[in-house]
Image 1 (cartoon, helix red, strand yellow):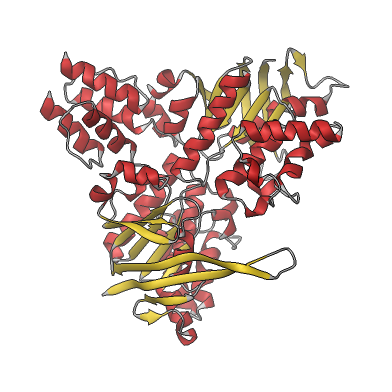
Image 2: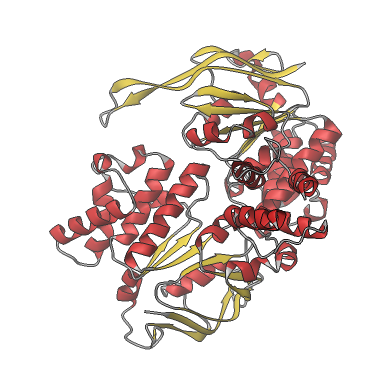
Length: 283
Length: 282
C-alpha cells in the first residue's frame, strides 16, 4: 500500500515587489516523484532552501500542488473534500517544540488534536494515554509543558500527533534545536512507533547520522530529487553529497579517509560496529 | 581583555514556585584571544552564563571582571562593555529588521553614537569579515538564504568591533555546508583578529574541531573545563548529563576494547585516521 505518492509534483509561488505587484514565479518544487509504502522510514535530505519543507507541507495539504499530483493514503490532496482525511492520515511535527505546544498541562495538549477531530471524550482519554505511553511521557501527563526539556517537549508534540492516530508522521527537522540526548530520545521514539504500530515515518533532517536507518533516502536540490537510494548507496557517494552542500556521518567520513589513505575498508560504512569490524579484520 | 567570573550565583524567579538556581558558584577566566566552547544539555545554564559575560544579566552574588575591572561597581560603563563583548543570540536572523542589509549592520555602531560614515565603513568591514557577498548589501535581509541571514546578523555584532564575540548556537538549523561555512568563518575571524570567541554548541563534533578549550555546564555548575581531548576523555560522565563525545572518539574506544592498541584521546576524523594507520602499520 502506497502511503505517500507524488508524480511530477510542481509547486510555484508568485514573487512580488514592495508594492505587491507580481514580478515573477518561483518554482519551489520541480517535477518531484516520491513513493513511500505503509510502514517505511524515508529520510529527505537537502540544503536550506532545497525544497524539503515545501515537499513536507504537501504531505498533509498545508500546501497543494500547482502541477502534478500528491496522493496521501490514496487521496488526492487537491480534493478539498478529502482535506480532513488527508490530515488524519499524515501528522506533522515541526522544528521548534515551543511553537507547537498550546496546552497548559501535558495531557490537555495531547488531547487537543483528537478533540478537534470530534473524537468522543472517553476515546480522547484513551488516545492521550496511548500517545503518552508510546513516547514514554506518561508520568508527565499532569505536568506543565514549559517545565520540560526540549527533547521531552518534542516527544509530547509527537504524542499529540499520535493521538490523531495517523498512518504517517512527517517530521520536519524535529531535532534541530535539541541536545545530543534529546536528539536520541526523539529518534528512538519514532523508531519504536514504526516497529510497534507500523506508522510510516518521513524524516527531514540536516543530521546525516539520523538517516542511516532509513529504508530509503531522497536528496533534494533546487526543488528536484537529485539522488535516491538506500543509506549505503547514498552515503557511499561522498563527493556528490558535498556538491549538494550535504555531508556523511562522521563514521562514514572516517572510513572514507582511511580508504583514501590506502586502507582496505569497504565503501558506504554507516555504523560504528561495521567500521570497528572492518579495521579489526585488517589488524 | 580577559573576562573573569568569581563565585557567580544566579537564581531565576527567587521566592516563586519557579525558583531555579541557574548558576551555582561558577568561577572561570577566559584570557584574551582564546577560542572557547561551552557545552551542556538544554537548561544546564549555558545561556545564563553567557549573558553574564556582557552584563545583560547581573549575578546575585559573586563578581564579573572585564579587563580586571569589576563590572558591578557603581558607574561602570555597561554600554561600553556591551560594545566590547558582542553577543549573537540563537536564531539571530529573527533580529534583522532594517530595510537593507547594510543599514541593518550599521544599527549597532549607530547606536554607539558613531558618525554615519564611520558606521558604514565598519558595516562594510564586518560584512567582508563574515564573507557576505557585496552584491546583496542593498537587498532586504528577509530575502536572503538562512546562512546569509545569519552572516548578516553576526556582522551586525562585529560592526561594533567587540574584543570578545559570543555566539549562542550559531549553526542551529543550518545545512551541513552552512554549518561548516559559518564555523570556518568564525575560526578565520579568530585567527585574523585575535578576538576572543565563545561558542555555545550542541554539536560535539563541531566543538571538537574548532575550539581550544571546552567548558561543560551541568545543573548550573561548571562540571568540566579543559582541552577537547581532556574533556571528551570523560565521555561516560558526559553521557550521564545529556551530552556525548564525537562519534570518532567512540570508534577509538571500541577498537581498544577489541584489543587494537590505539590512543583513545582522539576527537576529530583526521586524528582518528592518523592514529588508526599508525597502529595498523606498526
